[in-house]
Length: 242
Image (cartoon, rainbow, N blue to C red; front, side, top):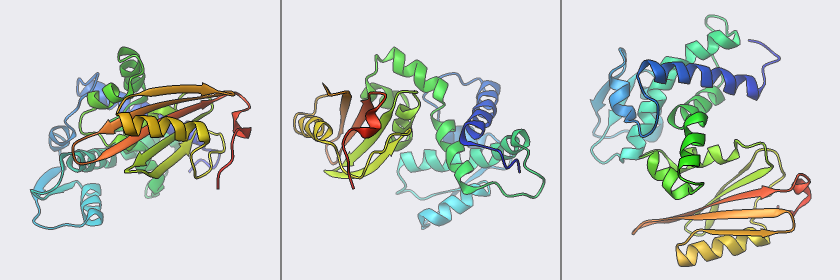
C-alpha cells in the first residue's frame, strides 16, 4: 500500500470509482433504490432472515448476501445493500491506490465508500443548490438514506464547519472539517437548537464570526435536529467544550 496515501487521495479514488459505476448504471441523480441495484449485480443476492443481529447482517452483506427480516426498516435495507455494492467496488478503489493482491483495505475505506456511494458529493452539491440550501428538502431527495450520511456532506466545503446532530435532546454526533469542536454545543448553537426543537422551524443565527443554521427533522414518533456551524477563518478559537 502507498504509505503516502492521505484522506484526499482516498476520497478522490472513491469518487472516481463511484462516478464510473453510477454512470454505467445510468444513474445521475437521487433517489436510488440500492436494494434493487444491488441484486442486479452478479454475486449479490437477497435472502429472508427470521433473526439476525446488525453485526451478522453487515458481515453477510460484505460477502454479497442481504439478510432481510420482515421487521427490518427500509433505511437499514438500503444501507446494507449499499455495503454489499461497496464490497463489489472496493477492489477498483484498491487498484487506483496501489493495494497489492491479498492486502486487506482498512475498515475505514469501506465506511467512506458506503457514505460517498449513497450520497455522492457531486450529487449533493447539485441537490443543495437546487433546494436553495434547505437540508430538510435535500434529505427528502435522498430517500431512505440515513440522516447522518446525508449530513456528513455538509462538511465538504472548505469553510471551517462543525456538524451537530441532536437526537431527542441528546447530542449524538459532533464532527468538523478541521476546527476544534468540543463535545458540547456553543451558546449560539444551543440557542438555535432550542428554537428549531420547540417551533419545528428552520433557523439561522450569526454572531461574532459564527453562523449557525439549524433544521428540524421531526416526525410523529421521533425528532432530530441538524446544526451546521460555519466559523470565521480563525473560528477554531471560538468557544470551547469538553
